[in-house]
Length: 105
Image (cartoon, rainbow, N blue to C red; front, side):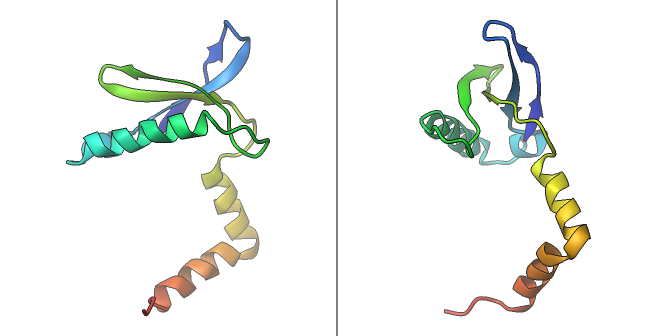
């Protein structure tokens, strides 16, 4: 995913524009991936909760769908996970345990 934080001048707010990244665009099932991406935007636009990012709009640009969403100040999830793992090792340990113990049915 790719995102940027431009300003919505009509509403006077900072927003994030999220699109599918090049890796996703190069996959053979890109049309299906993009369909699910747009469905995510439409589903999230119906959700109103303080712990769920607000989706304002979605639109196609040169054949690529984009989602306009609320900007939330702070670390992104990747940075949070990296810092959390470094500080206490819990996520790292959990990931290793999952690799060692395959699921059985």
